[in-house]
Amino acid sequence: QVQLVESGGGLVQAGMSLRLSCAASGSMFSAYHMGWFRQTPGKEREFVAAVTWDGHSTKYADSVKGRFTISKDNAKSTGYLQMNNLKPEDTARYYCASGVRYNTNYTQYNYWGQGTQVTVSS
Image 1 (cartoon, rainbow, N blue to C red):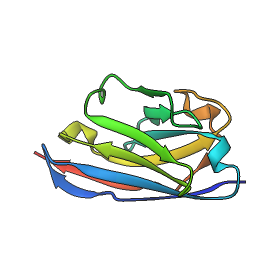
Image 2 (cartoon, helix red, strand yellow):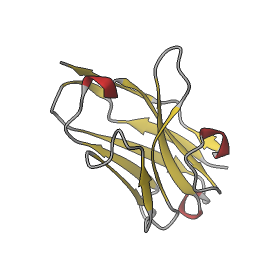
Image 3 (cartoon, rainbow, N blue to C red):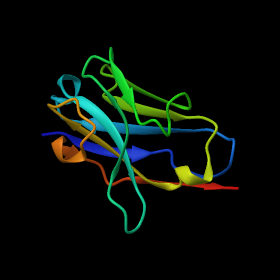
C-alpha cells in the first residue's frame, strides 16, 4: 500500500512558478513509477508527467514540455513537479499517482492522492 499527500498548490500570476510535492508513506513507493495528472470540473483527468521508479526516465504532455519538470526522491519518499512559466490554462486540481506501470493513462495507476489546487491568473 502507498498513501500519497500532495502539497504546494496555490494562486499565482501567469509567468510565475510553483513546486508541487507528493509525500508518500508505504515501503513500495521507491519501487513504483509516479505520475502527475490534472483535472478541471467536467473534464477527464489529464496526463501531465511521469517518471520511472528510479527517476531515470521521464515523459511529459506536449502542453507542459519545457516548462514542467517531474522528479522523484526515493530517499525522502517524495515526488515533485516543478512548474515554471505557468499559464492560465494550467489552472486545475493536480494529483500525484503511483503504480507499477509507467504510463500516461490515469487508469493504469494504483494509488492516488487527494490533489492540490493550482490557479493561475492572467
